[in-house]
Image (cartoon, rainbow, N blue to C red):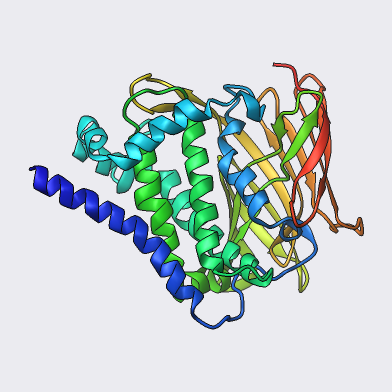
Length: 368
């Protein structure tokens, strides 16, 4: 038994090393036309870069409204250590959860209730979204003259993933199979998958996938991180009328609707759905989070799949209305703007600077 566990542990370690070795090999290949990062100076792509990705992806869970948004207040050491222990020695945690439960709820799409379908964000945000992020970051690093761009991209994605799992740990001391599934099977899996050409071609030509994350900003006077969040747009052109596309907006919230391309560059998209408004820790010995949902609707304007502006209305107290205008959307050079209003009329508004940082500052406060 011990020998089989050692062999399995070596297999998982080899899987992690494979993602970086495949990235290193790909860096030896000649540069080709980018699939996702086109170097556009307008919209969400004008913000794109490793810092923007890390803040939106690594601190995405701060949207769950169950704790402080101040980065100083986060329990990095305690939570990071627990995640690290589970990642370095995953089999006791999987055994404690039960191998059948682990694979049924977190790996394969075999559980469908709100409390057990933990695999859903694993495929959408970690495998497909994380893979696309790895690919686009590789193109960004290459366009900016960084050596070994795929290695740097894989490192950025994995650092963001570890930060996200650290914040999701929420004080747990014990098993965290969620982090094991996310990192070993889906974050690393996404890197490996998008190291091949066909997924990149599929999600840039047939099914249009784009990073529509928010505009992260540090706010005065509380120095909290607001307006951060990792989101993707998916458009699937209808075969009989390709200017109309099925539309999905996915992240901590998921919207479904339609997108209409009304000229050669611009599209308007509308969707309705729900947002995971709270992730509440249901155990102190296992990283199980109970999810509460709220209704959400949104309208989005993009140019060549680079998001220019968005308006979202969500049935929560704080981020009741969230409005974003991205850099160079309407002849405002290098600056993006955003505002959020709660149900009581309190608001925060901010300004965001385009590359190389893609980060901004805001003023205001939302009372708890």
